[in-house]
Length: 545
Image (tube, rainbow, N blue to C red):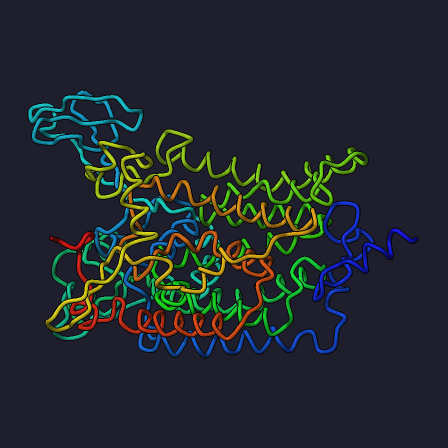
């Protein structure tokens, strides 16, 4: 008893008595519900949800009225509803669709793949075999293009009920003066080729009174992204509140709200939330499942939920699979030290946790194989018909890309010039310390006096580094972007590190959060918005001498 009192007496001010127990997290006898038994526990999360919904909607503004320009996930949701894997209509443009060409040769042989060098008749099959398909062999061959969405399909599964409910076949009665082109233009994501495929025997000419089947697909992915972006704010607050009550951060409710607002409005999170578009939707939904995964992992008591949320996370953003060690770490290292007993129960939890990721991983691998004949091929090699030189020469991940990605993440800055517009931004983004200056406080963390604190801190840094490394070796900087968007995959862990650092949130910290808001508000207003975008953003990466 005396020893316990002594330890409590020497605990630093502002650190509450920890309810952490056998697994190095929360006592096993406590439930998630007990953490809500405070006075009006719902008020702060509700207010954050309202603030997020109103704020993001205002920044989105005219984008709310229609689907984004890159609704790839809606296309894939439609394909899934039809029981197919390739998209069911002509893509609206050629940006970031995985396309495979299939030839049925005169010999009867069928080959599928992409051109390695069409001028030299070099064709690479899905199996990786190099073929020479000369003009004579291709003459009379039946050629088919298969277009796929190569991004992980998680958001498409979430969209399926809405696409099923609000999109689908409608009957269009041809009016005087209409033709196939004018009819197609009246509907989102409909081409003349689509009209012909949906209406058997349709000729180029239509007459007034003719009835055509049109399959609409105008599900609004902007609202979809804003919903998840809004939901993430109360989820982050609940996570921060739980670890505050657990004694791991000593943060007040006010501190936690500052951290939530910093992520939501003072980082690249803001411009990504208000755009819709396949790349940004995936990042925002990925954060949702990361936060749910962390909430379920904190006490080590919810292995199945933790596994399900991790599975949903990496079905949205593949790199989030690398955070799979977080839940087992809590179970196997109670108090930051390898457990000495209770191994049977601990191993049982880890096995239960692994069910969801194992099933999801198996499904995704099989999904890859069905489309591209390889379990490890998810389709990015076939972007732009497989003609991206950097991917063909170096692959998707290579040391070759490291220097450029490090610059995009840490040192890329806007160009200052004497003439209008005076400041010019690169479409490759800018340093994370320009978009979120408060990240500098990651390096001002106080020394951790307790093993549990050090364990949490090292765990979060490990997650950041393990997820960041693939991005730094990736063939793309994140282009096009206002700031380094790939950092969102580990932003929840960076926020936790700020909370765990125990550095007081002084006026200077809050000042830098506000500066981050101003910077990112500018980005949310100008990025990909008509004339402002054309005037202020440029293709350059390094400023020329």
